[in-house]
Image (cartoon, rainbow, N blue to C red; front, side, top):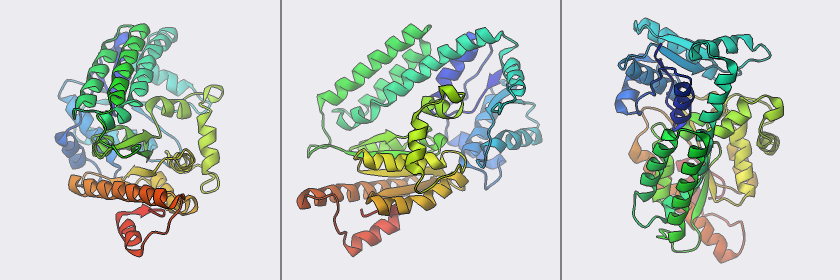
Length: 392
């Protein structure tokens, strides 16, 4: 068996660590390129989610490396993630790929199926050994999430463009190569220290007061994978904006995969914040997108960008609710739905306009000494054309 899995941000570092520690022959999918996307789009249904198309491209490129087995998460509820594995299996079978799809479905009170899938992927290793390897891989994911929280601020203040990206890439390599939990923690500490030294150096792209801070909410894949979201965080950083991402890998695992007693308590806070606008589960991260937007407003952020794959039902529901949230809280929100047809120039223009609106809004608030101001009709029309909600 030679195993692979879908690519999503830096998740491959933790996953490959788990399986290599168990002695499984695992191949991380190659970095996502235009070829990856083109392969997935060519062989996937036109209206399929963008993440599914990219995943199909991942598998086809991994097949070229001799992979014969795919590990894939299942799902429950309205989100189409629960159908990904079935659709992908049909596509690969139709192409004669000769690849086995092993699906890790949530147990839902019936853990037997999940345990059999784990046994298949791990070559029947004892559960105690599997658990130790999971803890090792998990330690690397936690360290990556920790350093990623430092990256947006360092990027805004870096004196030399590209330094932050280089430090992060080197830190990823050190964490990936760590041979123990202790080494992973040490690599994470060094990376965080290096990133903080960049931000404290104040190369300051934003000399007039504190930089804008924008929250990023939406579907987990689109938040984590730069190849899918047009490198959104990097683009905003170059515009002098600090970003706050609503979900990390460890957040998502704690919210969705941990059993009840060990679930993250943050989920209850987010759901409570969303309840006046969306009080029932709609699949995926729909409720979280709404709740986290409310929380970001309470935290004093300047605005929110909501990101999802085109045709994603949970995020469409969230997008239908967020204009009301923006009006009630006087809080600018912009929604971006992306797929393989999204153009870089168009996205860049919308981001630049949104950031300009936020800067003008902050300046107007400063001049008037208030948290509200009356936007001109022209500015309201511009905001509407950009898909921006709220009194920007």
